[in-house]
Amino acid sequence: MKKQNPKDWKPATRLVRGGRLQSQFGETSEALFLNSSYTYETAEASEALFAGKSEGFKYGRYSHPNLAMLEERLALMEGAEACAVTASGMAAVFAALMAQLRAGDHVAASKVLFSSCHYILTEILPRFGITYTLVEGTDMKGWQKAITKKTRCVFIESPANPTLEIVDIAAVAGLCKKTGSCLIVDNVFATPLLQHPLKLGADVVVYSTTKHIDGQGRTLGGAILGSRKFIDETVMPFVRHTGPHMSHFNAWILLKSLETLELRVSRHCDNAEALAAMLESYPKVSKIIYPGLKSHPQYAVAKKQMSRGGPMIAFELKGGKKAAFKFMNALNIIDISNNLGNAKSLVTHPASTTHASMGLAARKALGISEDLIRLSVGIEDIADLKKDIVEALK
Image (cartoon, rainbow, N blue to C red; front, side, top):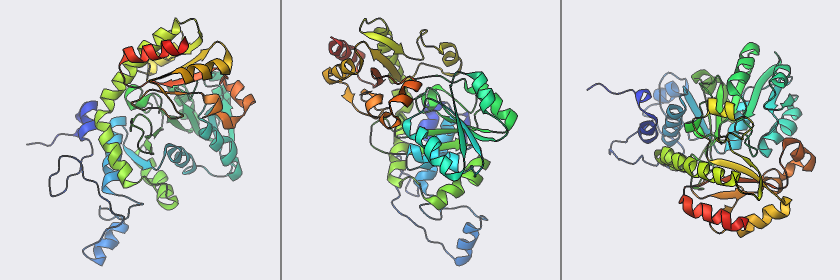
C-alpha cells in the first residue's frame, strides 16, 4: 500500500501523527530517549555521519529522536520546510536574530513587544554594533521609512503583547521583499492554528512553546520555523555551537501536548469570544481590546489574517491601578500569573510584572496603562468564568 504524505493530512491529524518515530518495539506513545550521545558500528560510519554523508544522530546538543519528532511535527503544523527547537521562547527569538546579524546591520521592529524582546533589540544588539528602529505597528509609512537596504531583519509581534495590536503582516512582508530583509513574526498570541505568517509572506516564525503549545504550564521551550536552507545553514550552526537546545524530556512533553492543541485552541477561542462580548458592554470596563470584536482598531486586518479572534483579551478598568488590583484580588477561579496560554485562565497586570522593566515613560508610549489587564482565557466552563469575572467586577 502506498505510504501517505503527512503534508496531505488535515491539521488535527498532523498534530497527532506528524514526525512520528517508532522503535523496534512498536510503541503507540512516542518513546522518551534519555541519552546524550550515540555509538557507531565503525570509525568510518562515525566519520561519514559527521561529514554529512550519512544520516543519523550525533550528539544531544546537535540532534536527538525526541527533538527530531517535535521539529517535524511543528514544521508540518506550520507549513514550514524545517524547524529548530530551543530551550525557551526567548532563546528562539535571540537565535533567529543573532544567527544572521552582523556588526553594521540594522533591525526594524514594531514598538509594542514583550519586554524581553524589547530588551534584546534596544540593549543587547547595540552592544554588537547593530542599530534598530522601532515603528508604530499600524503605521505603514513608518515601516516604509524604517525598512531600507541596510535592514537585515524585521521583527514583529501580531497580535502584540500585551495590547493586542495587529500588524498587517502581508503589507510589511511586501516591503521586506523589496529590500531583501528577513521578516520574523512572533506568532505566539495567535497560535499556529489561527494565523499563518509564512503564507502571508513572512520568512521566519518563532514561538514560545511554553504557551499554548504546551498549554499546561509544565515546560519551557521555543521554536524557529522557516525554509530548510535558513534552518540548516543559518540557525543550526548558531544553536549547535552556543547550546540553547531544548531538553529531551521537554521535547517529549510538547510532542504529546500537540495532540490536543486543536481541541484546546478551539475552546480557548469560544470562551474568549464570549468573555470579550460580555466585557464590552460592562460599565466598569473603560476599554476592551480583542481582535474578534469590531471595536478593535485593526479589526479589518485581524479579520483578513486570523481565522478567529484568539485566546487573549486585554481591557482597562475605570479607577486605574487600584481598581485593576482590586479586581484581580477578587477573582476566585482565574489565577494571577505572568504566564499565558494555559488550560487555566490567567490574569496579568503587565505594567507591574511582564513590562515593569521598561519604565513608566516607555510603557505610556506603547499604551500599556496602569489599569490595563491582560487575560489569557482558559478552557474552563464559560458560565463559571463569566460568574467569576462579574462577581470580581462588583
